[in-house]
Structures are given as C-alpha cells and as structure tokens.
Length: 220
Image (cartoon, rainbow, N blue to C red; front, top):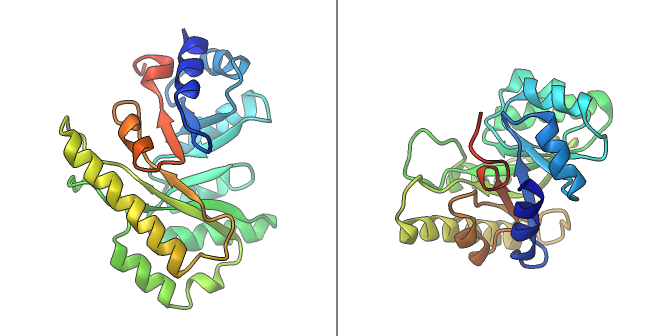
C-alpha cells in the first residue's frame, strides 16, 4: 500500500514539487517500505524521534524537521538535518546559526509564516520578517541558508479559506524573493499542503508538500 500511495502521489505532482513523507510516529519498517519505493525525503516533528530514526536508517535519507522546534533542541539535529521548515522566531534563527557555526555547516531553513486563523499555530507575521530583513540581524547570521517559506492553513473543510491562505503565503514568497532574495538561488521553496489540502496547495504554487496519513495510514 505504501509503495502504491507514493507512486500515485508522485505521478500527480507537477515538475519541481517535492513530496515529503511525514513519518512521525511510524515505525522504521514502514519508513523502509517507503524508502524501497524510492522515497528519500521524510518529515518528523519531534527531535528525539528524528535523531533515533536518523541513526537507525539509511544515511541517504533527507530528514526534514517539520514541527515546532525549541531552541535548546537544535544542537541534536544540526549536523544532519536536510531542512528545518518551522523557523518562527529570531531567537531560533540565532540558535541555528550558533550551532551551524560550531560544526562548520550552513543549515538550510524556511521562514514559517502564520497564515491560519488559529492562534495555536506558530509563525512570523509579514511585518516581523520585513523588520528582520531591514535590520542587520540577518546579515550577522552566516551559518543559516534561507531557502524559502512555510505555512499551514486553517484546519477547516472550507476550501475557499484554505486557498486564500495558501495564496497569501505564495504572495509573501514572491514579495520576499523580489525585494530581498532576487540574487539568492537557494531561496526557492514554498512548503505548504498536507494530506487533506495538498491539491489546493499545489495549484497555488507549493514546491514542497508534507503528506503522512495518505502514505502510511493513520498515526499510531
């Protein structure tokens, strides 16, 4: 089933859109089934689980940290994480930079924006990021690589609202690219869309979708 689901999802994606298999709470055996089907990008939301799976599974897997990341946990994933999706504060950016400096690595990150109506979700506002980019703070961070933006839509069945929120994130990305990152080749990702809403996200320009239950079944 996992192989079939990955094939079905991958075939339906436009060129340039990557599928991340969200493997949180799922076993190494299930991840290996996806791996043997050709999947290499996997997403986790807890540092302890991510580290354990990194140590146990093939080293050519690209691990994505997709959950809320606490600053004091960055050091555990800094040496190997492929992309940190949920960078939602200056404090976290500074800690990622600090850990990157310690190991001599530029750590790829996405700026997470709060586009949903739910207060429980994390993320920068447009104003906060514009203030950051207008200051000298970002220039001082030499061991992070900003690769784009990430956001989560409101958990709702209202497709019009979901589409509007994804359009907002795509618009934020375009403005940032034009005004601040036009010459930065790595700034090219829009990470939005999960199992229930990824078709809308893809239509609105997502370059990374994060899909779990449609691949692995419901969480354990």
